[in-house]
Image: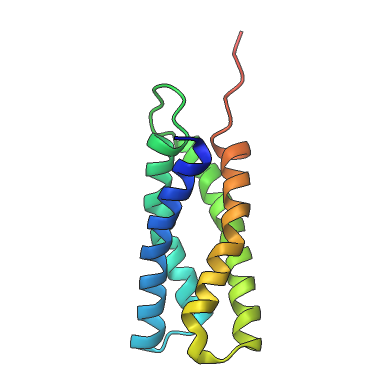
Length: 130
């Protein structure tokens, strides 16, 4: 299985959890859609880091790293900003009864940003040390 396919598999699982939390917060508790999207994303991203580290970008035995976790947190913030911007934009132009479609659009748009930054920044091969 390729890195992209492993990343996609983990991300889809994370998105299902993310969207369930966000939709539940929005429809059940009346939390604004952009805030619900941010909360769902944050909770799912925390679990995704560990799975991406240990499975998606496996390249030999790597232990969890505070440095990579910090990089992943920064990537997650960028991804979250992209997601919230997409959700806020779609929420302004589409009807509220399309909340799930809006959340899926935000997740889809932010997926590629997350993959590129994760692959080339967080989980990039570490340079050889002399």
